[in-house]
Amino acid sequence: MLKLTETQIKMLEEIANLHHTPEGAYNIRTNGESAGRASTENIKITSKEDVSGIDIRIKPGTKDETVYIPVVISETGMKEVVYNDFYIGEGADVTIVAGCGIDNCGAHDSEHDGVHRFFVGKNAVCRYVEKHYGSGVGTGKRILNPVTEVYQEENSYMEMEMVQIKGVDDTDRRTVAELAAGAKMVVRERLMTHDDQRAISLYDVKLNGDDSSADVVSRSVARDNSYQKFDATVVGNAACSGHTECDSIIMDKGTILAVPGLEANNVDAELVHEAAIGKIAGDQLMKLMTLGLTEQEAEEQIINGFLK
Image 1 (spheres, rainbow, N blue to C red):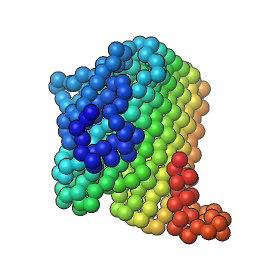
Image 2 (image 1 turned 135 degrees about the horizontal axis):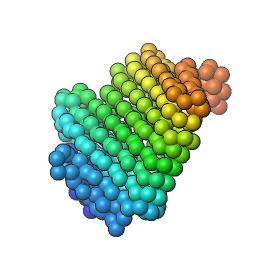
Image 3 (image 1 turned 135 degrees about the vertical axis):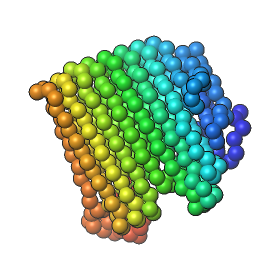
Image 4 (image 1 turned 45 degrees about the vertical axis):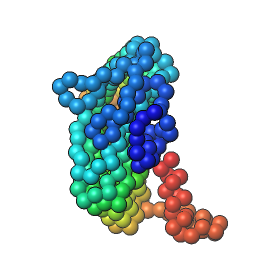
């Protein structure tokens, strides 16, 4: 069993839905050190020698296996940068569960910056789940700056679930991708900011091969005095299809900036973008309030449903 504090266990439940030591391959990092690691016959996890981070190598043809690589910080003032590379073999079908939780009860900022690179082989399928969460009563900030690079070979499939719902004071999320012929990418981002939080999401997806496609959708809620920016660009360099969408609810004195971008460099590139920002509709609130909910309870019901 991993040696974790009660706070660290709670954070792992929040970001990775882990209630005990996972089966199969995993690498759990707490306060800058490995708290536990395991490889399997098909998935090997090794430490990098030149920088802080790990290499995850998944054998071709691996099916129905899950890798857990969550990070937890529970010390105030801690800052780290981690580099993780994923090599997903041809024809593999795997799920990777990442995420970072920061519990800061002190006066100094705590920060985790992660650089993840995915090399997805031909005909491979990868589902990637990344959840961010912050907690703690300290005045120090909880800062997360993830960088994700995705390189997809022919006919591969990449599905990304990016979630940040509570407690992160400042985040700058940057995702870049390059897709070969027949490759497909699906991104679903869910984000909520509150108080004076700031969240930047940048996507730059290049569709380089014929019949490649990308579908990037963000749903977000900005409350109190928080600020969000969603900047998504899809570049069509072949006969491809791309779609970006930002659907946001603005509340209180929140601010949301949506910057959808399309660049077509091929006559057969089909690219579409959508953006909608608005407040919660009054008729939705009234309907729920007639069922006995208070206005605040009605708002929470609507937000929870919107972000599912």
